[in-house]
Amino acid sequence: MAFISETLLGVILGGIIAFVSSILVNLIQDYIKRPILLISDIITFWGMAEEGGESLWTAARITVKNQGGTAAEDCKATLIDLHDDPPIEMRVGWLIPKGDFTVTINADDTESIDLCAINPKGVLLITTSESGYGKGKIGEVGSTYPRQITGQLKVSASNAKQCVKKIWISTVLDRKAKFVYFSKPEDWPPKSVS
View 1 (tube, rainbow, N blue to C red):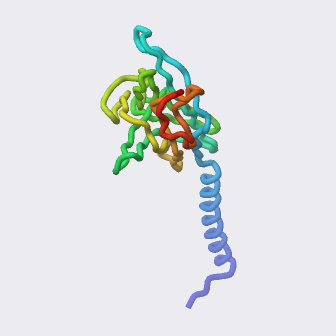
View 2 (cartoon, rainbow, N blue to C red):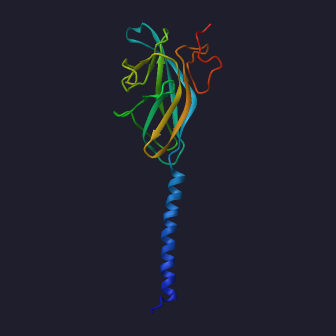
View 3 (cartoon, rainbow, N blue to C red):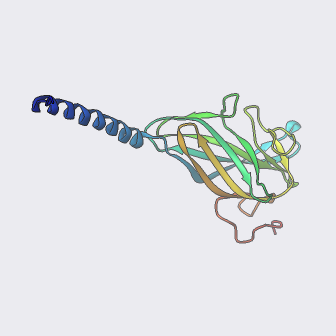
């Protein structure tokens, strides 16, 4: 029976330890630098007029931040209405999306979701496109929506853990001209502004 010399055995064990260590170091590095998506608590509201300037819409924009060390790729945003079973999922558009409604959010950078808009008559438009708000069927680009929403806003990426946040969307502007909330309003569902 042939014995392996102590020197050769030391070289083999050293090689195995170095190989395993390099794999562990790479895994730890990837974990530390991974993209981390965060939906901001701040909602921006602004007014926009329809063609011809007839009625003023109030629109809501949400900011998503990548707090990680690498870019979050192919980010998609989805609004989930939990009213129905199964819940209705609607893709919502980014402020500047690619043709497939995805964006890349660089490390320590932000992108904005153009979530929805309402008009003075209480018509709620969900989902947007790079060409602005349109009108279509529920779940399509520029959908009108028949009711208030209690649901979730989900942002997912091909290389990051998804971020989900509870959301309430009203068809009525409150006294502060808001209609989208990340915490349930006391008077939910609101009836009208008095």
